[in-house]
Image 1 (cartoon, rainbow, N blue to C red):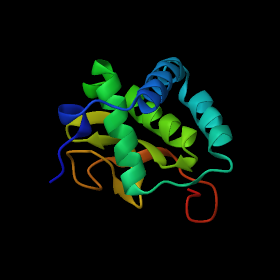
Image 2: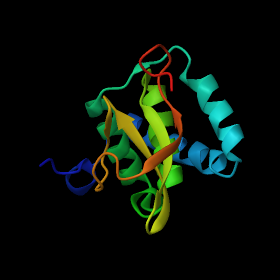
Image 3: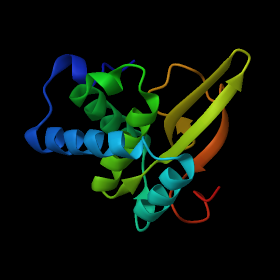
Length: 141
């Protein structure tokens, strides 16, 4: 089991600045309706390589380190900030939103290499309703 970066060491200044920028942009993006969020993410993902689990995990750690809101229950803002921070590095994970019906719960998360990144629930716990993966045949959903 890996220890989150946020608990042990400070982020480098460049990473910290990028994480703060991604968190701020994600907060604004999270206010938009889902169709607008999807359109913005489709535009942003162009030209990006698929993110690895390590890249997405590092971005998630940086976002959680930079924002107490994202470290808490703000899953939409956190997931958007993670994809934005990954995009700043030239990569794109799969951004997902989904639901669970019993009991009802909605959630947003990021996947890389087919697995949820930094989530406590197992894969398949939520049924995806909207995904934006990397461009190309593997990421198209």
